[in-house]
Image (cartoon, rainbow, N blue to C red):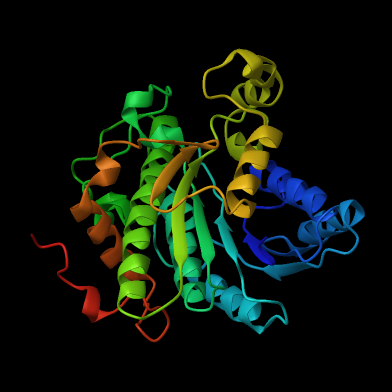
Length: 333
């Protein structure tokens, strides 16, 4: 059983449900430690208190991290590595946002949804991957909305290349649409990036291990399904927020790929904790491995996303064994 689990986005929704399931599991199994990076430390401490009520012997560490800021992610990674805990066995990169408009930018000048949902997770994973336990797991929370074939009612991703995803104002091919649709398209594009990144990271950790660098790290992407009632629609208008919070949850038992946060949180926790589930280079819908979108298997898109993300984060080979010039050009054929 894993000893140390890091979970982002644990103060609400899927992340909170997952954390509670792991705490209840840990109440019957000694040795689990939870690290919860979060933007709101006060809220994080409230969650930690609730988790300790479920499992008093489980250490819960709250680390401040604002995923809108790459500098904050770096500070959080340093704080995490300074904790006196066993090496991290599982990284659950779950935190995410969705906006009802498309005009948000970080202080780094990067499109906000891309920066939070993809780039911050990419950076945190790379800063920690060289310090993980052996074996270890990394799981990115993605979404079925990344796949146009799923007919989710969300606009399909628009991914010409990673540079345009990070700076869409420069993308002359981006459709002209309402601010709501534009914000949703940023979200589905970021979720495609989660899957592209997971597959590229899975390949790199395998090649690094074959080259004698790093341990046995397995990487996967996780689709929790549509989870009405969570805070994902908090930026929407009043009517849509009302439907999302109070009406759509009533339809969960009847909807295809619709789940409660509790059900999806349990599935994510099991992927994290159960060594019998083989996760490497897979896309899970709940606990079932399935095919992801056609675009997500595009190796050139995966490599392009990685290279641009590495540059935007100013990552070096000193910081991550998965970055640096030794990886350049490996997918030219």
